[in-house]
Image (cartoon, rainbow, N blue to C red; front, side, top):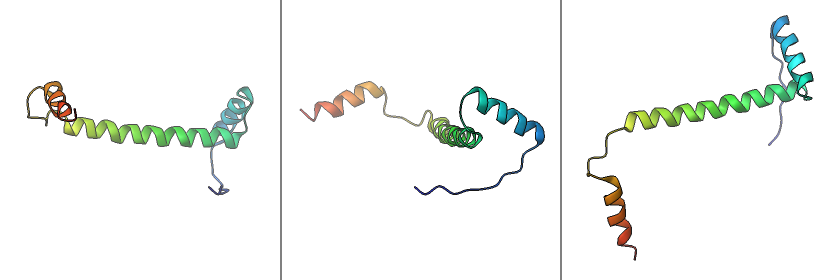
Amino acid sequence: MRNRRTIITISESEKSWLAAYSKNNHISMAEAIRRSIAQLKEQEVEGVYQKLVHETKGIWDKGDGLKYQNKIRSEWD
C-alpha cells in the first residue's frame, strides 16, 4: 500500500489538543490521525453490521434454529 500525503485544516485548539495527545502517547500527530481514521473505519464497518443484524432480526421462520442446525449437521455424518 502506498501512503499519500495530504493537507488538512484544523482549528488552533484542535491542533493544540492533537499535539498534546500525541506527545502524551509518544506518537506523531500523523500517527494519531492515522489511528483515528482506522478507528472510524472500524466503527463504520461495525455500524453496517449492526444495521444488517437489526434489519434481518426475526426473519427466520423454520422454528427452533438450534434443532434445525443439528438436523442439517447430522446429515454430514
